Amino acid sequence: MKQTKKVLVIALALAMAAAAFGGCSSGSGSEASKEASSASSAQTEASGSEELTDGDRIIAAAKEGKVGNWGLGNEYEILALLTKYEQEPKYLSQSFDMDGFDDGSITLASAMTYNELGLVKNSYEGGYGYGENIGIIDMNNEGVAMLEDNLFCTKEFAKANPNTVKAFVYASMQGWKYACEHPDEAAQIVYEAGSSVSSDHQAYMASEVKKLVETDTKGAAVTEYGKMDEEAMQQTLDLAKKYISLDDKTAADKLQTLTLDDIRDTSFLSSEKDFGTPEKTDVKIQLKWLPQCQFMGYYVAKAKGYYDEVGLNVDIISGGGDIGETTAVNNGTVDFGVTWVSNLISADAGGMDLVEVAQVFQRSGLVLVYKK
Image (cartoon, rainbow, N blue to C red; front, top):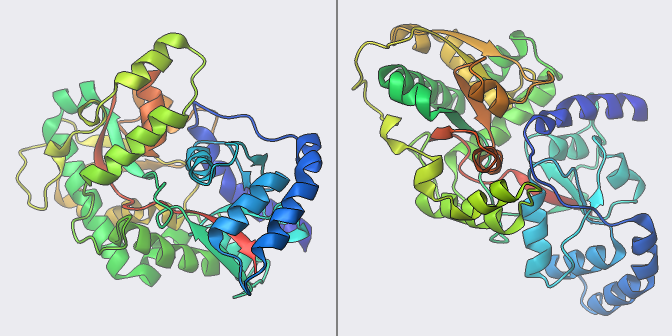
């Protein structure tokens, strides 16, 4: 059973590997062991109350060197969280499964709400079955959230094909609207498109992705699909500048000069069909991974004919290959891509010319999961 879990979670978690440019070294096992006794003391002191606070848990796990992350693009939130609690900003390298959480070698394990968290909680195929015997620490509640899935293209493509970009964004957001209104149907559409996971997990993913699309970092409802929230985007950029580490000096210097106007363009987002005839009608979009409900809006837009209605023939390209989505878009292999905002920031700092045209996820999907 453990092997089945590992294979499934590896298949899911590799979605993140396509995009990371920066990184941070993780804590070594020897360092963790040296600090273990002091961490034990800290946890004992914190246990004076019946229940540890999230801060207590973070500090104790940090001192033990048992805060885990994959280090593939969303570790910056973990580094910001540890800094907030005055802990050394380093993490334990987490493998592409939740076995480390299961066997106790990782006390606070990274999980995406729509992916690994579902596998930890549920008992369906590949699940660990913990049910309600777990707790989570939410990056949004901690004030260190960074925005994730967005829709982007190159600035050159957007300038040359403005009607195409507007039409694609409009139809895609219609797809996202329908998917969020009918998550069970959306999950089935994705499953039939060649799902990389079980139908039960797709249904779980759809319900959780809906929350990321329709709720902002402060917990407020969002009705404008694709909205680029100025405050949330600025926080993402500020944290990126602080925690993304780029080896190339030119890239590192450019990172510090980037503004929101350098990485996003709100002019292509509209709830009305206020665009002319698309300049290019055959377009491709590159996903981060195989068909799953993380991308359900695009599959729904295609299945429901929303792309056809605006004069576009859209080819949805699954991820998982050797070329990441930012590279594929930058070199013209595809026209559009889905990536995290931090990855787009890193790519532009490194010399690419990418621009976000819609922000699909309105809050971070990253949590740290622990056993109660």
